[in-house]
Length: 310
Ligand code: FER
Image 1 (tube, helix red, strand yellow):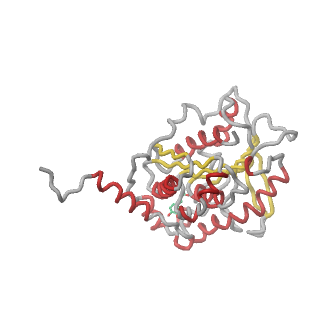
Image 2 (cartoon, rainbow, N blue to C red):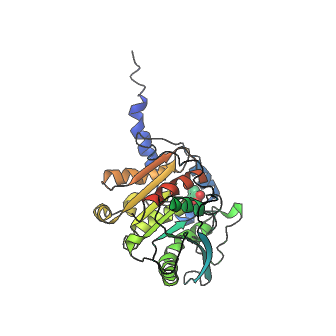
Image 3 (cartoon, rainbow, N blue to C red):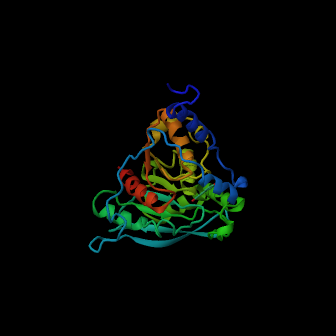
């Protein structure tokens, strides 16, 4: 006979999940610390039945340069920031065959807490992923803005012992005004962009995932395509992110959430996914087999980039 005092795993599951999700309150910049981050990364992963892959692993070579494919180019872009009082810089990807006579949609791609405007093109190879997708006709030729999301007078990545600090985290919150008031207008002025919401996307990894959800979902007049990959605890609580699910249902063209099933930060994305599901807001939920790493981010960019501007 079964011991009636030992609940079966399946009875415990919803409770464990509720606890995990309830503990995913937004971490305000002033609370950020190395100890807190270590604890967040070390959280046990509790998976629900629908925390599964939406897509297979990207095909071999998806992020490797091809000798026979046309390549886009990266250029340096500078703009004046009223937030930092300084000139700031972004890297801009111009797709293969770029012509100033045409008009392009724009993807803003945001980096993580220790990164900068080189993170996505560095070990994740975002430019090569796009080159290959565009060569195969799987993605619309687009401009990609690789911004620096740390809106501080000194926006260089801090040394390792200063990454998880209130000062560094505050820079990521301050980027909201820099993005909307300075960077987007400057990009639309310099490049041949399609500048309506349906031709502008925002996505990011980790801290940049949190920024993308926080800034994108509160500015549906600016972005119709939004992606958060392995979003960090800077993500606002779901009910604050999406106080008006009906408007979200109507206006969002794509809301894409992903996280690795070996990533201790997954409770952040699970909380958003559960809320979206409860409120009937369509979204992609891709839980892959990765950790908090470039494999997951490259894979999810590969799928996200195919779905936007379509
Ligand atoms: C935290 C753990 C991780 C946190 C941020 C991160 C805001 C971000 C990680 C990344 O960008 O890779 O507690 O607090």
